[in-house]
Length: 253
Image (cartoon, rainbow, N blue to C red):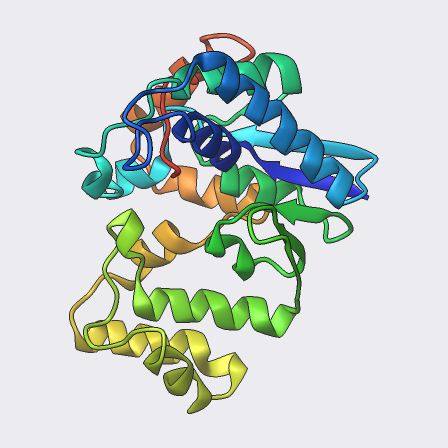
């Protein structure tokens, strides 16, 4: 079994675990954040019975922010855990986490995943990818079919993603999205959702690119073609910072 690990989530949770809370009014030492990171990653490998793993952490450059500057802007005021950068560096240097350039860790996993391993994350966005999923917080296993994955994506496009500051169709939430899709055959979901976007004078193509996890290099190539030459240069410069890329950025919580 090969585990595909979302190192963004791992690093954030372990760094955040040391922050002051209502139960404790002090920040725990950095050593505990590192210890918890090791423990969590080892637990993931044991619980999934993985004999190999691969994983990514998001770099500072992200095409979604270039397409839509307000992407995740609602998180700008949220204070990041004190040890986050150190933990990010730890998973890169000690656990071999790969740093993405141009897209997020989600996309790197989506491109690499071949359906024969297991995606390890707590991020609901991954449910648009068919295959095996393991939530290492709830200890829940899920087998997502092609139909379920397709349904999950089009539902997300109807609902939007408040945590990423991506708006959805007004008045449609988790309850109404499935009901809307049920009115159409699966092959008509795209056109039905697109028509609804047009009724509300919303940008279907933009939200599609913001919410869709990349699945292959061709999709990434198509995204790059939507960017200006100057924007693509940003990614080239980031790649030039070394094999580890720029790990100063963080987007996931």
